[in-house]
Amino acid sequence: MSTRPGNSRRRATTEPALAPPEDLEFGHTDLPRPDDDAAESGPLRRCVVTRERLAKERMIRFVIAPDRAVVPDLAARLPGRGIWLSAARNVVETARLRGAFAKAARGPVSVPPDLLEMLQAALVRRISESLGLARRAGQAVAGFEKAREWLRDGRVGVVIQAADGSPEERARFLSSARGTVAVHAPLSAEALGAVFGRDRAVHVVVAPGALAERIGLDCTRLGGLAPGPTANDKGANDKGANDKDAGA
Image 1: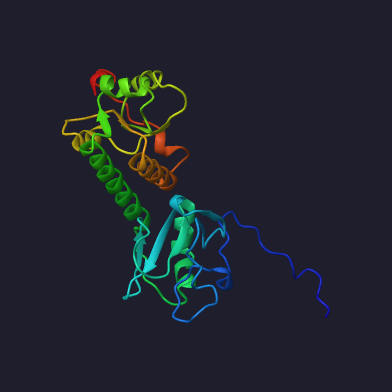
Image 2: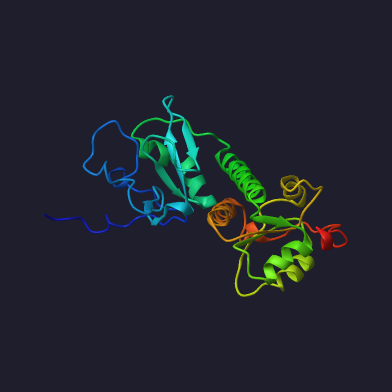
C-alpha cells in the first residue's frame, strides 16, 4: 500500500493533545465495552486529555448526570462511569474548551463555563471540612506556639499556613521542623481561623494519619488548578501581617 509523501506532518500545538475516542477508556457510554469491568479498578486512572496514567488521588473525577451535565466528583464516589482529568489548570481548560467531555461521554454534554472556579471552591470546602474534623478529633492545633511544639516533637503529618500570612513568620515557624514535612497554604488567615473558632490563624498542624493525607492531597489538587507556578504555597499577600502572625 503506497502513501503520499508529506501527508504525515501535523501542526504543532502547545495545548495537551486530546486522546482519540477509541482511547478514552473511562468515557461514559451506553454500549457495552470489553474493559468495562476493569476500567476503574486498580490505583491508576488515565487522563482523557493527556492520556497519562496517574494515581487517582491526584486526579479529578467527573460523571455525567442523567440530564447530561458534567458533574465533578472530588470524592470519587458517585455512581456511573468516571471521566478522569489530571488536576492541572490547563488540562481542565482544554477539556472544557475542546470537547473532551463530550468525546469521552460519546454524546453531547453540558459543561459549566465556570468549571475551574467550581472545582477550586469545592476543594476549599473539602479542605476546611477535613481540618474541622481533624480539630474535633484532637488531631490538629492552631497557633504559633502550640503548633510549633508539635512540629518540634515530630508529631506532624502536614502543615497548613495562611496564604496571606507573613512570609517571614511562616519561614520562622517552619525552622522548628524536624526533617521534611509537607507544607501547603490553601486558605486565608480568616478562613483558617473560622475552622478553629478564632478571628484568624496562620499556623496549623495536623497529626499524621488519614486526615492529614487527605488534606495534603486536596491541597495539591487545589494548587494544580491555581494560575501561575507554585500558587498553592506562595503566601502572596502579606500586607499588614508582620505584626499579627506571631501569635496566630
